[in-house]
Amino acid sequence: MNEELDFIIDSTRELMENSILHLEKEFRNIRAGKASPAMLGNVTVDYYGSQTPLTQIANVSTMDAHTITVQPWEKKMLHGIEKAIMNANLGFNPMNNGDIIIINVPVLTEERRKELSKQAKAATEFAKIGIRNGRREAMGEIKKTEASEDMKTNAEIDIQKLTDAFIIDVDELYKIKDQEIMKV
Image (cartoon, rainbow, N blue to C red; front, side):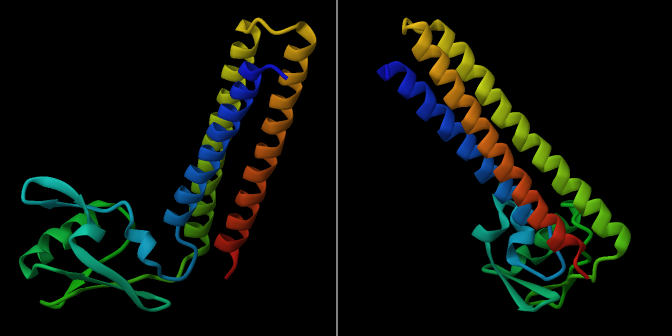
């Protein structure tokens, strides 16, 4: 096949793989029952005037399935970290004991599970949109090439097969995450 068409197909595959990676990252931030340090992955703290990820200024770990502990490397950061966790709107109520911050992860209610499932579905749709945009861009690029019509048609078929395969992968990831969320 034409080198230019191969490049378009490869770059489209990479873009679609990035959509999957982004979706997996989004899913890690959606909690499903048990405590995980990843739940605080998006929390940023005002650290000497700049927004810094929590993991860069404190040790985040789990004590058990329902407790996350945050131990800052500087004790004077305790109140700032506590405030940042509350402002992150994760539904957590951090407790500061003077040395560490303890977060009890409540058991999910049926209503909260449905809400998290909707959140996962929205992230899934966003990933599908990214994949379809990659397909649209690739189809446009294929039309601009100087390859023969048969080669263009074959490349378009390859792009569509890629798109279908990645959409199936996204749906499978959602199905697994939804089962994880809804499991009591």
